[in-house]
Length: 276
Image (cartoon, rainbow, N blue to C red; front, side, top):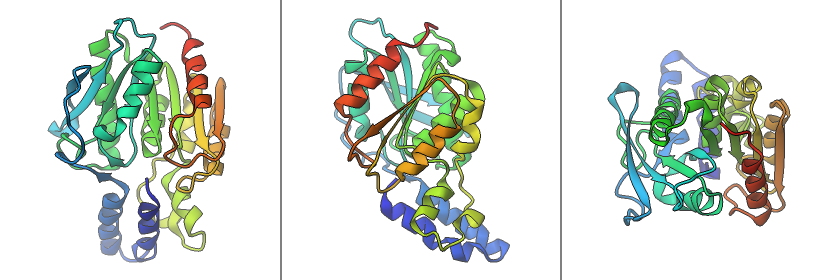
């Protein structure tokens, strides 16, 4: 989620407080701002012999596309579903595959929500939450594990998707990168003088949902994040149950690279998980 996205959300807040027709139009505009997909053929789609195309059926007849990557030894220590942020598509998440497959020796599925990359449809809050469930169902069947034994990981907006999935359906573990409490809190942090909480229709209210999740949590956040304030990450963490761990990336921004400290913490976190 970029700074321009947040400022645009703030700009529609005052008009949205008016009549129902205006609010409806503002809701459609808001939805277009929250979700900023890069549709195919945008991105580097060069085939990778170590990555398999995944085609997933979601609700409403929407077909999703993703990339499945498995460790070379065929013996993954975890099966991971990764839900990405509000921009780009799977081609901008190659680093996620490198982290989980190559450094963590895990099977990982990175998929595109509806409207992103090669996936059909148009993104909505309800739609992307359905997409995550469909993707996890596909991944669990493909890997031969229970859905509840999939590790769910998400970045930024994808963290909100991951929290919803883990809180409602459970997960072997939850990993959150640069994740917010809810969307109105992010918008309000930029313009505290506007009534954004009262008028925004998009929510992804992770801070209200995460108490329903009772599994292991690893959360990472840069303390120089200019998009999702560090304090919102800490507030979300405070609402979560034990066992939980928070990693602060000193000087890290919203899209910081995976630091050695975070990679080491993730490695230890996965190694300590109870066996499925």
